[in-house]
Length: 133
Image (cartoon, rainbow, N blue to C red; front, top):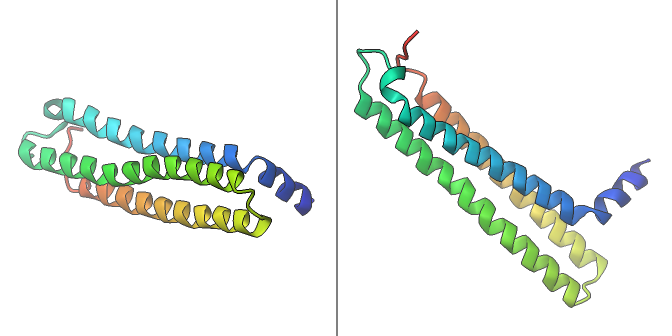
């Protein structure tokens, strides 16, 4: 059973990698769009005693924070494609290809950790804001 799963993953690794990258890019873009929507509806969302300028500064900070994983993901997508083409053209052996896959797993885990920390920081920055009930 494990050999079957490993075989399927190795045959479709390029497609799975593209899917994972696309999902992470979509999640990051959705977070950015959410912050932009909050920005556009800010006056109607905030309680009267809350500072609009302070909340806008937090939204801008959140947008810039989300730009970092988005830029990394876009860079990684092109890098992975070029690396796959290079390894294919050079007729790389199995161990080199496997090392490239493990390197991609490590980098994607790093990106997911960065995205998780960023999402937590952005979410917690809105914790003390008074919204209308």
